[in-house]
Length: 194
Image (cartoon, rainbow, N blue to C red; front, side):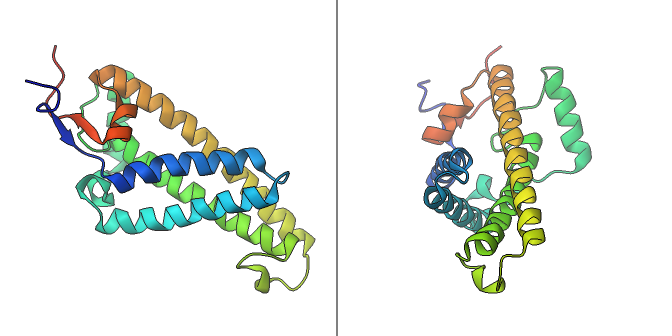
């Protein structure tokens, strides 16, 4: 069988474009911080728009993009992680239980990061959609939102490193290139050869 006959489309164009634009936007925002506020804000707005679109797509999107396809019980996630650490995790065509949980964690963490970023922008710069909520610079709230913003941006970075490690381990266990599948959308349709 040829490689194409043995492959199936798993990741739709929206999921793939979302993934890579989110990666780029997050790192632009993370690296620019306060030094390049216009670029930082633009990247942050892009992340927020992407998250809203992904949440909608998680409800109405294609099979493997839907939250219902990759949300599992805590017991299933724990068992999957244990099997992964023993290098004998079950292969999933879509997101595995740990990958599904990671997506949910990242969405929540990025939402908190972007929303607190909007609050900081509104408080300290009197700019952005939340600026009208703040009539003056309130130092307590500005510092509070800034600390939470920084905490969750760093937490998101930690999640990204864990995600990358998971992709590497799963690619090794199942002998498939998961990064390539997030580029072309294709995954092997059968189990790996022994």
